[in-house]
Length: 354
Image 1 (cartoon, rainbow, N blue to C red):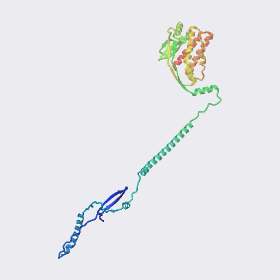
Image 2 (spheres, rainbow, N blue to C red):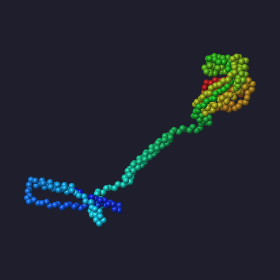
Image 3 (cartoon, rainbow, N blue to C red):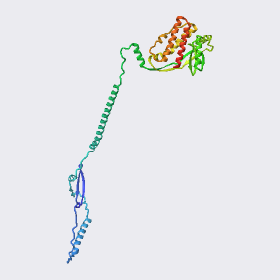
Image 4 (tube, helix red, strand yellow):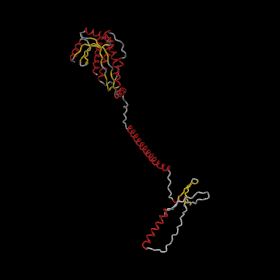
């Protein structure tokens, strides 16, 4: 390889352009002094070659070691000599580097994830819409397949239509607590004892009905609208042979019924008021031998299509009491009032068994 030229490169920036100059100083080599030539020269053939090599090496080494750096003195008239090496040639000789813009690099990197995100979002939306459309279609199909109830066959009579409509609908209701006053004839531990005593009293013209409450059998002889009226009736019955008769208030618990038609529910809700009205008329007539106005009881009892047996029995007893009150109004026969009292006592027994 060639040894680099000895010298220094000076870089000067002119008008923003960088230019390089290489300074090559002049070499002042001292002229060698001639050595005296001897008269005789002996040449050794063996040492000639080695000495020649050593001398050449020594001469070269001495030249390198004895290099003198001469700095020219500055003077106004002296003009420094520079060897101008064009920097453009150096630049042209270097391999060109491909310029990469950071903005374009970042744009390329950013475009790839943005594109993938957009594609993913579009796919997710399409999948969601497909599933939603499928579910909506499924719901519409299920709702459209529900069976439709067939209408009632034409040609039915008015009563049959009413019965069909009322039996199709079922409801639950309750009878509020029933408060009344009674004349009690005794308390028995067995049903047979209560029934035997009731037969004896009926034979004397005294109404009676046994009602089981709390495991005991109570024998009731009359109902009344107040305690004073009940006491007056008990006095009459004592005269007929009911020695243990006495007046007392009676509270029957609330009753709850289910699977009732609309007609049955309406009738059950009106039972307490119908009973109180009949009790007032009958007990008052037993004391004063006069009957108050009807108060529309007959209209309240005109309810059809009742299928519940217990409700039908209570309705029958109330209708019987109402008929006996009307009979007493016409005939003034006290036996009609006794029969009306018996119907009301039967009503209490059925009500208590619900």
